[in-house]
Image (cartoon, rainbow, N blue to C red; front, side):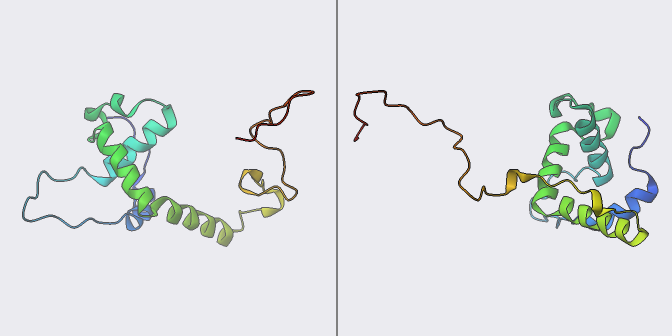
Length: 133
């Protein structure tokens, strides 16, 4: 077992954000992997850049496929957005968030005067009529 990335203190703060799925009773299947083990696996893959299929199951207690599915479930449930908002709120409350030096990503903003096209316009050349089809 590797050293825990998610400490007990951090886990106590994260656990309430993770939704608890209902257990199926008619065809229950096997029990779900532990959420903390899945989070450890997710953080390991994200921080190392390894493939999900290469994640050692014995090391984390959850397979790469399980960690990937949990990442997808939590994304759809808005867990990562909630976590982001929680961290920002705590930083603001502690006075550690300085928005005077914020970085704005302009890829989400429309160019006011149209900007350039991602596809260059095709030149028709001198003397050639433009295509009408």
